[in-house]
Length: 602
Image 1 (spheres, rainbow, N blue to C red):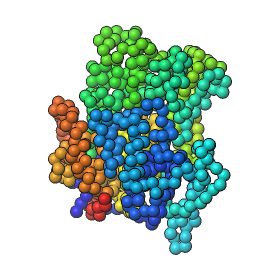
Image 2: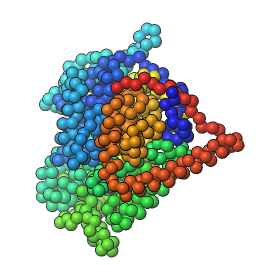
Image 3: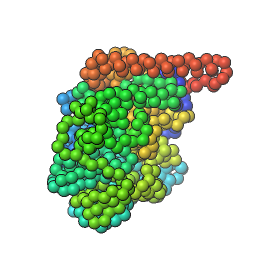
């Protein structure tokens, strides 16, 4: 029977070309580079799909950046509901956000639960990946992996001795947070204090009694500047282009990432409404108005400084680490009449963070900023993100990529491009996959990596449907090329291999239907149907993932329901108009040929 819903003009199925699928690849062995969250979940799915899997990890432990980049008492800003893999859930309703230590324990438990350790070679650095010449008869040649043991005294540098291994396919899972981006600030070498990147930061004791400048305003920057203000003699935050702050918790006891609906936003939204970003546009005004009523400012939730251009839904990756905001807001609220109305929003604090523009140059202890102001510092910490590099790949994939933000940090330097198909594979080289190289606006990378690994397996099997329209999940702000809307990304990949559930399929379990329609795009929803369907996913959806919907309460759910019905009516009206214009010959019918269900695999 058909795996597509009757509304072929609805997302996420409207992009598909019909019964045409991409060709299968003859693959037996797969090398996975990296044993972080992306590498582990890819290893599990690939092994279960029948492939011979070897995981190469340069560090002596599992966990990737969750171990190597961890710092004092750091926590995830994505909830357990969203972050957990489909096959091993994290049941922690009293504490929905795990510490990094707790999450790395979860990854170790995941490896133990599914017996992944025999697949993993720790302390093994990948030096070089080369294409292997094709064999006679036209069979693709695969890849030669050159490895070297990692020296314990020089991690991550590798020793001189090399070994070679042959594989049919390669899956790169070394993570987004691997190569620090250090902006070229004139005079940085002359700084008389401590200058470091956030990748090297471990403990707030280094800030005790110091004059501290944190450069950047992402989640790591906000985390670290909060730790600094509690100990430092003075604290400043350099904000270049702004940020959009919305706290990850404090929403009636529910995490922020559970307060999003699939229905009529990620699915069953008419393609005209979707292409016009109608829901994003209209709800942006409502959300900003509510922020203004609740906190006195509409540029973020209780955010009085660091306004970003285009404060709109679908434009930005949210900054969900907000403990520093009361300290940042304090000097700005002091000079505003609005403090008399919204004085109660921020807790009282006995210190403050000075917001400054981008640094222009450094002379000894003195930092001069682009507005001409100066200040002396003992510590300058660069929370400026990471640059994308794959130095081991064949041939060098590097391109000169100037920083689109301009200013003192441009150009961003040498960056390696990600492949065109969902940032996973290049059509000309489907055996080389990149898993986990994507940033969601409100979401988490681990479940996206699981989705990508399932999509790639389906692609290797020839089960991925070709699409006639390009993906529409990219964020409109385009600060990062791989910045995406989480729910749309998950649905559009799932639709291509038959894993996006239709309402008719969900109706047999009313709780699952409600959890899906009124809930977030949790990874378990994409294991209800399709080639990776699993009975456990139905139980998880009906219990654990129904819980956030129930906990919201009647009032909040009514608001979600009314919003969903309103935009559903708009989509139905668009469908009626499309049907009418098709009937009179003004437009061509937007139809999709039916497809046969693929065999289910657990």
